[in-house]
Length: 319
Image (cartoon, rainbow, N blue to C red; front, side, top):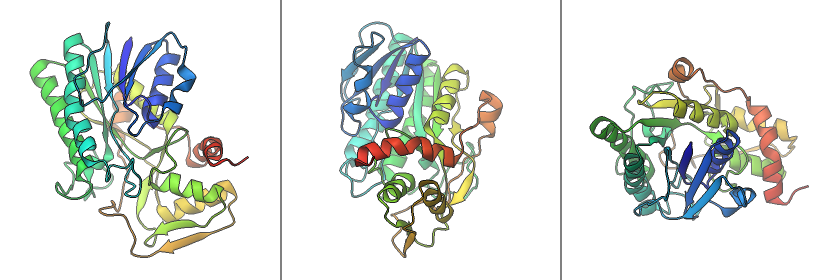
């Protein structure tokens, strides 16, 4: 296939480019580098099967030549309110990527009669009252809160994708991505793993917000990409959760980071400093992925951390 990937210079987009190229497809990458990094694509320079277009996905998209599949991964995704690349500081761009960007990428799929795959998120469930989260759960989301620019953009994107499927007959897919980590993720992402892994490698105490009882589940990027590829090749149109169902408290996660990195600095608790609207629990129910795609993650957390460490060490200048 010839595959268009928006957000190709991002953490997930660039890993997806590599996987599709390795499987023999040609890839057209698109990014405007607002949050993605050119460094994530430099290794593809000179690859005859990779073509890059620098463009904002919220503007009209024209791709010369045939497109067999359009994968929409362009969006700010970091919840770090202190980062200039986090969606708190890019609210309009985030909404436009989810709304106009999805519309434009669906337009490409329609004009080429191509498959379309939307990168959605577990954040559409908000601070869930159903646990673990199943695809039939409608979520508990504040539509006017500070996180809404990301949450509601993705919820709208899912609705628009299904409208194009039902009205125009577009061959669509929706993947709801849960917490994912690995090489090429931003060290300033703002989520638990990059924050703590960076602290551990710098031999600093790990900061845990509140008492650490809030839970997360962590999926290594190679497992996630496997799931996305299987979904792309499937005939499933309704949303599918892709993530690691192994849930753990943030406190236990911090202990795992320190143990895996041999960090002696310990843990510091920051009482009353949890992020705004930070979900208390997050765990995917992956029954649909197991049943429909024959997929489940294979890489456990400690192994995933070990695979991620060299990238973080390089970025931090640690040898």
